Length: 247
Length: 139
Image (cartoon, rainbow over all chains, first blue to last red; front, side, top):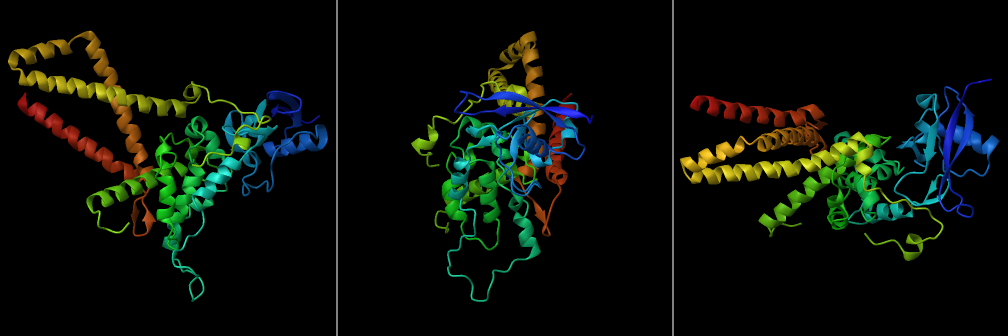
């Protein structure tokens, strides 16, 4: 008999129970299995009613973020062997409403993401006559790190500010706003500043820094927010000292 | 932010947890953040003591002697000791966070974090050395 490990999964079936309860499963402790493999094993062979989101199983789609032993993780990149001999506790991402089992409600994040216009904004429509906007490798390097975000919301689960004040725009959305602000082809900085210079924008962040610690793609949202604060402060001083200068 | 619609916010079947008041006590990185925030109280405390010192200095030699005797109170020594540790913690944690807030670029390449934080420490050492020099010169 192969070695096994116990997985305690938070189950929440709103038609049956008022609040989540843990259910234990024994799964094979294969060396190359991640938590997501174990969940799929449970769903395929033990209990088909278990609900969770996943897609690419290779750290690209950002769907399988869950809380593993209290830490927000991409379950496709979290190995069972790391937690041996167990047990491993798998819960839905914190700070979001739970729809069912490990599935969280993410519309709030989607709305916030849209509000910061994470796309290239041009004032001089239409597109250039010569084809595409050109960019040097150095210009690409300015924002590349922030563009690695996969919208997995793990940073939101780690952010106590978002947990305490759901109005806060949050780490990933601000990092992605910064990604487009830093893009040499973009002209939408002022439009984004209107949204992000509010209290629920960058100033809501108290710099706990945990978003950067947990990010599976090394995006550094905390850095993005602090750099944004610095830029906003400079902008404010400039408009205060030189009110005649163009915004 | 525009608040979410009433339907979504109050969906009866979604399970929501409240963030515990003691959220910061369960993880070292959160606790470190709270200690850093708390350090500002002790920084303020030290500022008040410094202002009192200036006030005593203005009051003449007797007043200043009285202030110095007051400083020897064991409670004040403890308070100053704790304040010192918190100010140290405050300075070190903030210095180490500078590279996050400032993405310094030189010839198109981002400077390593150590090089962005280092000038803070150098300035700190320089100011400390100056203070030590001024104090020992008098004595």
